[in-house]
Length: 233
Image (tube, rainbow, N blue to C red; front, side, top):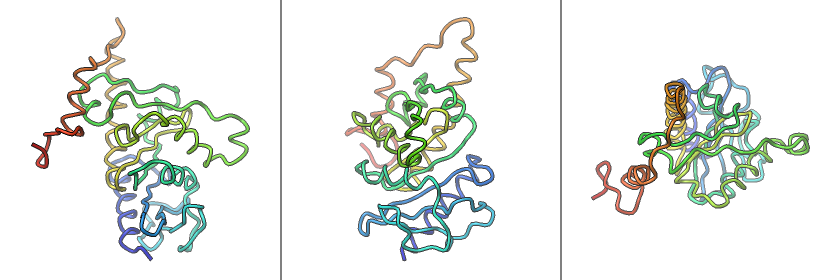
């Protein structure tokens, strides 16, 4: 079932490892097939070195396992919230990459200090609130997704394709699972750049990029008149 989708999810997970975004079993990637309403996701706790395409688990949007010999990732309920709520999102990634996690543990959004950030994210990378004790004691992973979705109620998830969960780590998404991986790579790099910017600005506060420059860099790649790359004007 969905063999091609399972292969894509497998290769996306391998790419997370190859990009240095995951260690041990810390992370997962998934993809959503809108025609069947099914999701393919990494199994829980399986080493990346042992993972095979056949190990990828298929679940429905209620989290019921449709195919697979393993339990799906423990973060599956969070991914499902994205697919139920974010229009145009068909791939999602969660990592514990060090730079992005540092900002999440500081419960800080990542300010847009430069054009590299603006090329990838339309504005600061937001951070959620801490989950309440009741939310953690209940459906923890599902409530994590709900907190993220609520934060993006007035945001375009494809323009700001990632978030930091306070005290936890980053989630990214995209129009497919490989784009979600791209966004995870970008998020880790801009997290590092932002930290370095602040460390160099010890004698004065680091200044955020002027909004008009950020808008230019985002729109030239993603706006209606985008001209970056080979597909635009």
